[in-house]
Length: 103
Image (cartoon, rainbow, N blue to C red; front, side, top):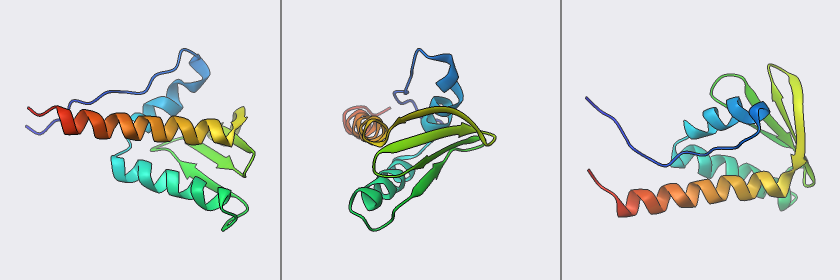
């Protein structure tokens, strides 16, 4: 039986439950790719980009705002910098956890 134990990402707002569930399924490589997409927008390489969850979530963003949708329906608009910080914080926590815990 293969399994992993890792920290999870959580938010108290119910509207974000699906998004955080899908982000929790991201590997570190997936997180790095998502962070790279935002970096590309911040650097001007792309004007717009998006990150897609495992099933229904999508985050479409430019330098300033990120629109979070489920099944194409907008559920929230957040600052892109906040999404970037959340993803980098989560990636860094996973890296720390994996470096300091083994079973």
